[in-house]
Length: 165
Image 1 (tube, rainbow, N blue to C red):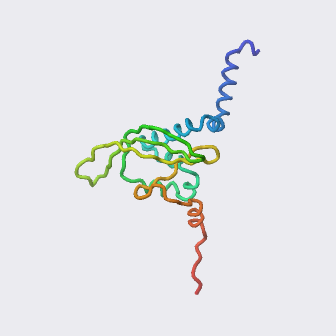
Image 2: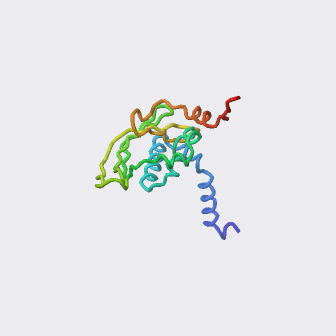
Image 3: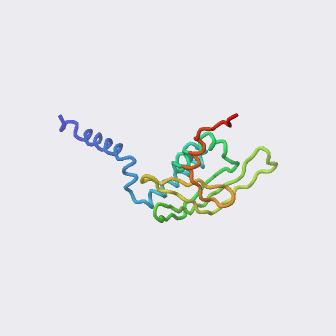
């Protein structure tokens, strides 16, 4: 019976193997290449306006501290049109991705549209459980101030005590 089906069995086995290899295969690939893939996923999602994907690509500690609703509400008026990943390097569990982004500001109150322009910057990624996640970047000041997202999440979830009378 196997001889009659032949190639069909082979295709089925290959499909099952590919499906089972998902996250593990990603983690065992070249870390620099995987970092570049994750950064491209993030920027593809930004270009498409897919905020759920951008949220899920941020480090898990950030996601515990900032709800999806809060993340969506906090999105600014910057529109991303295109991007280029210029370079990436890894320093331990920190990934540095040099990115060039074509962006503009869009807001209904603007009298005149703002012409898109290109900006270069470095973004940081953190390796968590074998996968790369983007560190949240603040829009002004130090883009990566030391923030303990787990501590922030614990504070937000702490029971509120009422003053005794």
